[in-house]
Image 1 (cartoon, rainbow, N blue to C red):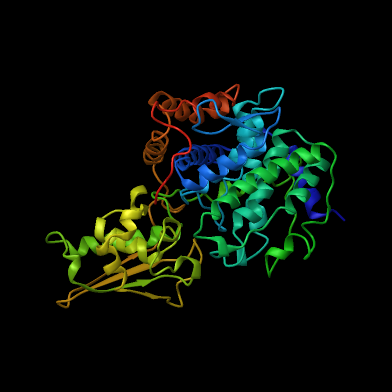
Image 2: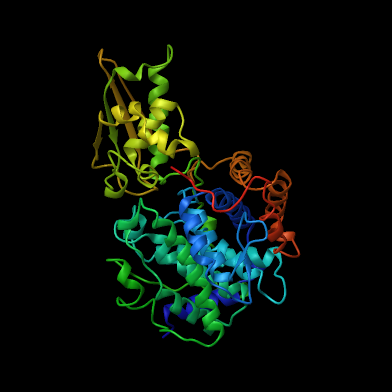
Length: 473
């Protein structure tokens, strides 16, 4: 009997450029550009600074670039680690369905690995390996109905992200089917991180560790290390993460023999965030902005006269945070994001700074918020909605509802807005020339003869830019 992991190893090894469709190429290039942008912005955070300081203790002959750091390098697994942390440090990276952040564990590992190979991989090689890593995550998430909901026990990038990093790294290393199998088996022993560390500085480490450990798993498999080939079949294997685990094979990739292979990304796009917070906050913010517009139809609304704010959202403990005290809590608070949108008519990168979180007007409004969990509001990024009702002292009441926010896979960002997001994020670190070149390289990555050209552009920092910047949110 063919074990499920063997089908994954065979598929990863046999994937080639002919399998890449126009839709998959288009979507994955958008994911890559967005990931680089949020990662570059993330190098301004305290968690990135601490991880970088730690990683600089380690030395090796092989060196890979730290994004945004002019000439700074680390051992490749630690470059993957810190760059992965940067990507998720502000919760600004892409989100998929079933729920995970697919790109942050994969792209940092691939770019770090690409700099160490004896023959520089092409852009098409990078694109194919990236999609192998995304595909494996998508397939694994579909082994469970529980995984379709907002996570409750394990943070998905730490569960499937490390497997995606291992698959992508194995593909870029051109490992054999058996070696791909063992890459995933080894990576599985580094999988898993509890949701209790959400809304803390440790959460971004889940993505950084996934990138690092997946890369290490592929390198260990290359050296001949082996793991259990039944890791995807057993309840004591990958099944430990889901109560309703039901694995299946990855369809064959032999196009000529009717293998029936079809990318998950072909059928399910990702969501691209407009501001740095948990995805659920985007429904709340759009509903709150719509409610504010109704209040201000005849002028600027007087929010001092708000009597009560009601949020109707799906049940989820870790994003129900009434009075956030710090940046990472604020990024995971329905209440904070709704009140910020009502007060400022926007939510942006600066909304999560200490002075914004601590301002009296916000704290006063937070005290007036009530949260309701309607039975028909399911904790799924594909099904949830948000309603915001604002009741004023003189009796006026307005309600607005968001079923699909702008940036969701059902309402994707325009290419212009996606590039605009990248430029805004990347320009905080890179020179204008570097920003433009990264946009051009990613936009034509399938034609690029050497993907490591990105290395120099990702380190062309602005004169005033330096690592160890502290984000005092």
